[in-house]
Length: 287
Ligand SMILES: [Fe+2]
Ligand SMILES: [Fe+2]
Image 1 (tube, protein in one colour):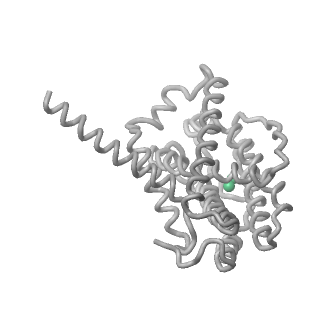
Image 2: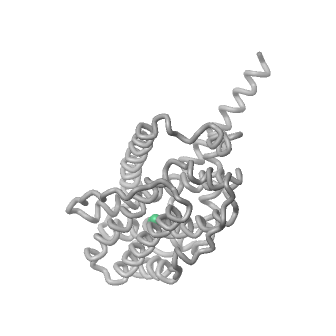
Image 3: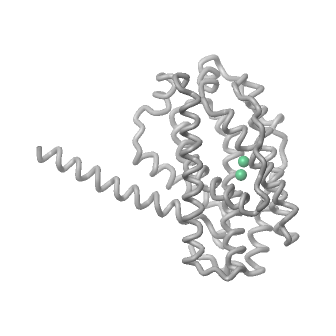
């Protein structure tokens, strides 16, 4: 649905900041209804190899947003960005509670120094979040469907996913507002987004590669992975990302802007894969 509000206007700023501030939830990660896990579920949770990376990513997120906050000149935007910093820091605490409670292996790594241009660091981080969340929507659906963990645990992760969805909606609107005020046209904004997404994708692939190298031989063991991946299809995963993104975005005010590039790419990929599958079936039948 097309927004009735002009990107970059005062009305737009009021809308995306106020909505973000008004939907902030107050809770303490310690007090969440953490479930007791039986031995097999605990073993599955402990076998997940990326808790250290998740914990580090959330700590780094809090540090970047906190560092950028004082540089935001507009008071209302600054209030919203500050609140995002609070939420990112709380995500790190939530993951820390998870690590301690279920004896997961993850150590605290030092956070790298940020470049002097903190706004670019914030923008890089924002596009990274958009990409991670879009893929995370699909992965989360797959994990939930496989009953990898009890539903109560997914309900807790859902609290985090909801906040990440709010962050990316806030970020997409912040970028549109910022670029519009700088006089950038819609095509120039789209091009700039594609460039930042390219950087985010390169960083993500680098992280996956590093994870594979450091986990060499200690990967998810075969039974754990098959629990996740039984019946896994790439097309199904991309479809899940696309559908979950639409479902999670549907709760936001239609006057807010939403990410469009990744859903469009996913939609194109699914159409292409469908055609490919149909062609393959046709070739099989002809043979
Ligand atoms: Fe976060
Ligand atoms: Fe976030």
